[in-house]
Length: 187
Image (cartoon, rainbow, N blue to C red; front, top):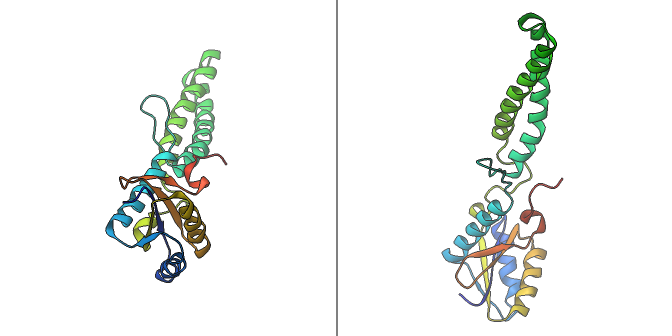
């Protein structure tokens, strides 16, 4: 591979062919090899790792969808657990200590259930890419200089590339050119 490389995935073969046609005017080499396809898949895996959220201890890593589910269901289930245990305090432990401890125990149990359930409902969120590098055709762009590669990146986006990954000379993806794909949950 050259010093500067891109791997772009398209949703249709027509878009990939249009990109190849438009890139012929630039001083770059355009390929459609297995190495380009593997670089795109590695780029997507790199994005998934970059956008995971990791907690302390053995918590995580979580995808964006799992993080949203956990953030939603943990407090809801904690509140439900506390509400379920509060009336039981009248029957099981009718004292001030019982009215304090039983809802706390219920909240802890509910939060645990909400954490597990919320994270398991939605490992992938509906707006996250679903292995686009495996589904669509991939075009590789290779150059010995960075300047034509920037023009090639713009053309790939104009034509409708679903994702464009920077690829190092070793064939490993250095990351996406999409800022939203590179950041964890921040909504």
